[in-house]
Length: 225
Image (cartoon, rainbow, N blue to C red; front, side, top):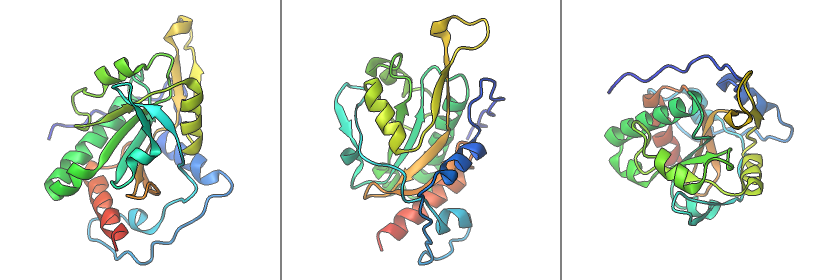
C-alpha cells in the first residue's frame, strides 16, 4: 500500500482532530456508554471497544451525487462511516478520505463480507459550491473509498445534518483572497454508525487505517450479539 500523505499545518483555523473531539465531548448532555460486554480484542484499542457517545446523530434529508433524495433511513441495516467536509478543502478532507479508503482496503483483507456491506459517506458543509454534479466528480478521486456516497443539499438541510452530528464549521476568506475563494473551518472526525443508525464510535482523521478496520469489525460483531 502506498504511503499516505501527511496532513499539512492547518493554516486557516481548521479545528484539529484532538480539539474537535474535545468540542464533542464538552457539549452538555452527552451520555457515556460502557461497552463492558465487549471482550477485549487483540490489536484493537481499548478506546474503540469501551466507549462512545450516544447523543450524536439524528434525522437528515439530503441528496446524493445523482441528485436523488438520501436520508438517515438509507443508512439503516448496514454499518456506515460518515465524514463532513467540502470538495475545495485543500488538505484535511482529502487526507481524511484517503485514510478512510485505506481503512476500507484493510477491512477488505480482514473481512471482505463486511467491507461489501459498509457504507462510506461524504457530506459537504459547502452546499453553495458542492452541487451533486461536483460531488459526483470528487468522490471518485484516487485513494478515496470505492463506492463513496457524496451528499449535498440546501443550506438549511446541510445545517440541520451538521447540527445533528455536532459538526462546527465557518466560512473564512484568507488574507488577500477574493470572496469566492473562501475556505471552510470545520471539525474533522470520521463517525461510525452501527446497523441501527446509532453512533458506535468516532475516529480522528489520522487514525491508523489498520486499527480503524479492526475497530469497525469488532464493534460490528459486538452489535450483532
